[in-house]
Length: 293
Image (cartoon, rainbow, N blue to C red; front, top):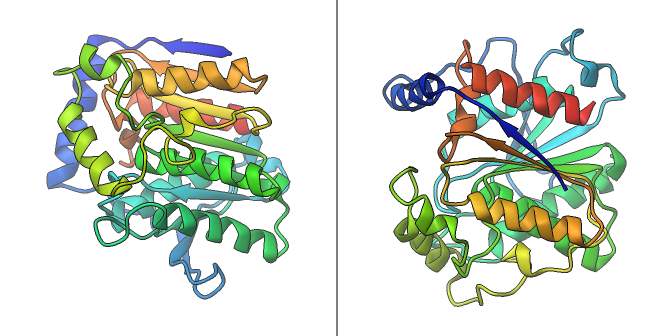
């Protein structure tokens, strides 16, 4: 397992907290050069939107053959913020040099597990049906979306579907039994706590077992997965969910990189959304670009 600890100063941590608070009152704006196209009915009935950023000649990934980045948003399986999600899809498109398909999966409580997972799988398989090679697809998710990405990989492997070229998971919840030590060790240092995770788990699972895969990816057969990049903040209650999953994938012979951003809370990567990103956002996007490239 490759682990990179990304050092950040106390000032950088404070700046992240300030900027995340400011975005609530003054949301960032989607860049004017974003190309947006609704996807229905081409994704098997799952709503979503193509978001494409102009290619960056200085981005090594942009010189590669065009593929697709499938973006699965966070929000505890319960919430969506389409405006911010479009901007995140734009940033991912810019970083990976590929158009981004932002998937609008069904939400709890009306649609508990496995509805959201089924939607992600349907959207992915629709790309294969349209002739997009699996080798040109990258799955990317954040928080609950990262959990869905990892769950989807396990289902695709089990069913014999072609696996994507790679996957990015930012702050995934991989163990819905809430057994990771960092849930308590980092309590009070993050925006999320055990009570929040328990709420998310209860609404998402709606009676399904938390100690089984694919809903808890940690309990799956983790050999044979595509290369993974996991990113997490060192102050997150989900730190050990990411770390334990990375260790398990590595033990199963898989290729996995774990980036730990020192001092960062949950959703720190949202700092990529404003037009003038903070240094941590620049590092995050650079790491993604280099990994894809």
